[in-house]
Length: 434
Image 1 (cartoon, rainbow, N blue to C red):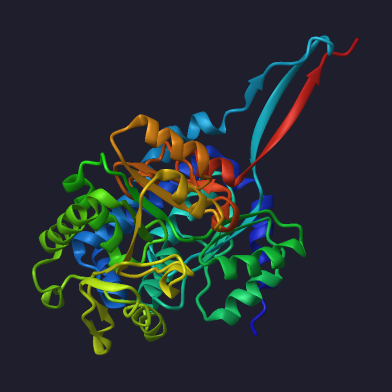
Image 2 (cartoon, helix red, strand yellow):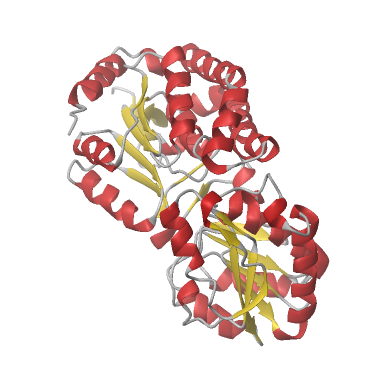
């Protein structure tokens, strides 16, 4: 197993020179990253097509554009974020002032997942850079083509003692986690998140864990059903459902179930065509292991739509499973694929009880025109974040910190949230000599 002690030592030595703390250095580095992404855009899009069969349109909007917007927002606000912030001082401490200084932690480790292999590697890296840290980035081995382009992009533009990409299998991640980092940012599954946190605890290293879980999508009887169906179809089947905040299952009020499912079926066909198996741009499942896991759910409940599969190209058609119960296998863990179970409810309290007795979800979506219904759910259920009458959009806003709670994660990022995550707030009280 490779030893990464020297790499971490080199980065720590470079950090101690103080160069990364300089605002000009940070701005120049962000501009360099932005230019490199633009230069390698075609290569990145081709890699995403190879690894996940993402179309250029989907690859650009969900992987590249979102990262470029994050860089732009950071450049516009970096000066304000970096400034020490004066705060009040208690009156019993006379002749004193109080200031909070944001300072970088030092050397950060970013471990990225495979489902958005570029965006979910670069977005936290931007946070580390904006806050003035050095960083080691470990991309996913399950998307090797994107990983190679990412490694090339970083190597061409940044010295290894500032930013380094380390490729490899699970043994590589294990070896990296044995080193003492000053901050660890991990995106992935809850079981692996526990492993990361255990490794970090040995060095008392702070962590951000961006995990997952079963994100409910509630369709109440007063929802605008056509709009809801369109937005749910788009949010669920983007990247073939391999999105950590995708609606995992539908909870629909009984009196509108049939109409809603009819609208949902139409919305799926509008998005992907009548015969989705002939759509060359529908993303594939990442590997055979995930494909086999997902196809095992296709016999649950009653099939309403879909279920076509092709193992040779890891294709699973968008599928709706009706008459699902909470006890069905598809409801045990996060689905992370293009399969959408539907559970019917009569009154809100019954589903609020079912959701709250399970692990806290990363996202929750409410489709209802009633503020009373919206407030009842928001006030009763703990979850990472979400939308009302929309799906996924909350994670695209730099003004909304994105993260989980409980088993769906800890800590948050995006916009100033990224700067804050990778910065220690150093509190200083200044007092005049008597």
